[in-house]
Length: 161
Image (cartoon, rainbow, N blue to C red; front, side, top):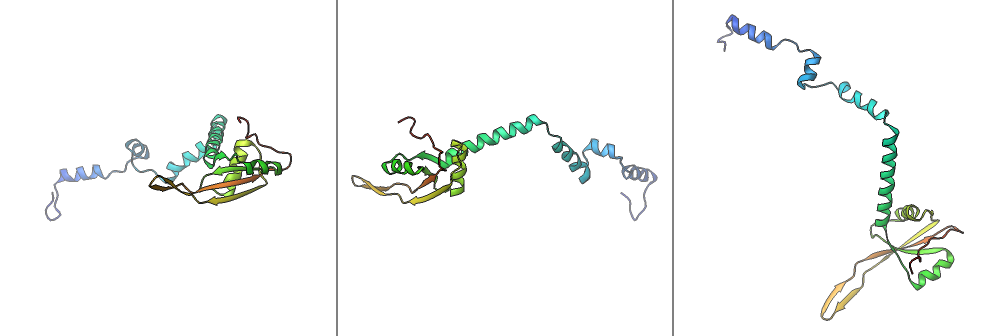
């Protein structure tokens, strides 16, 4: 370490070797910082030239995901006397998730049954208070959807009944 700015000739040579510029090839090999062009320029080219097989696989995964989410929106069809009377008017009843909206229900009907509904009405129903002996409880709140289909289109709900 120099005292008052005086250094030995050997120390000057050591400092000169450390401050010598490093080539870009050595920087890349040692893991030094790269410029933004070097980092992101290569990735743009890779994403543009994606093979067709990968894009087909992605669309299949999206279809499977949309169908599985459709079954989370549509919990079950409601098989009631009122629902059977509505079938004459081309309307169908479904129990749907409590946090879903009309748009999600319409998309789910189209994904599962392949028919685009003309109208969707949603009704929120409060859960009833129930008793078992001296114990009192409450059923959960739920939603009911009335789906209207275009004329001539039907859904096969009553297959297993």
